[in-house]
Image (cartoon, rainbow, N blue to C red):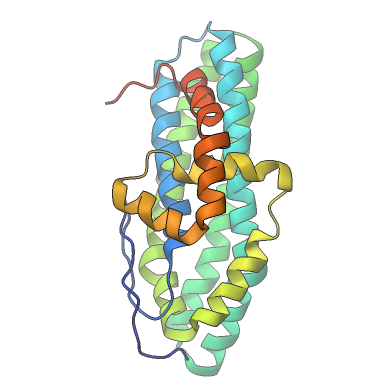
Length: 242
């Protein structure tokens, strides 16, 4: 079980909880913020983009593929590295409720995967042709995905990350974070760095810059930021605020 010292936690828009404890959960909260931001932007874009605007649908299709790839690597890393370590710790000193929380994390990942695939089919269809039926289906599929993934992120923040604080040390977490990060393809890293930094509030950007370090932050600002923002404008040109 971890020590009782605490580390002040980052809180970002939409976040359900920020369990205090010895582990700095900044990287997890940054990822969750970006997932929530993307889901909101996709929802607005899908409702607002004209079905016949093939170029924008192609940009949205490509952008969804990148969102899905990052989410896949994030969930795969949790399933392969984080949850097994926590399960072992919970079995040694936790409760049945703690174990149920971790079992729910993997079950929710499995539930979300086919929802992501359904959205991918919808984006791919609309990137290829104007199809009102496919558009209506995508609106429904994306609504379900947004609700389910949003609920999962909240569940993880409230309950699973509380277990991280109870059972893991900062050294445990640093090792696990490195293992999870090693699963990201090198070609996805520039996009992912800009994706994490995009539309963060000032305190979030400061926390992200501290976590990433000066070299990565400088690369984002000088090399990755503007190309990413151009891509966002192309994909989300019709994603007007509600």
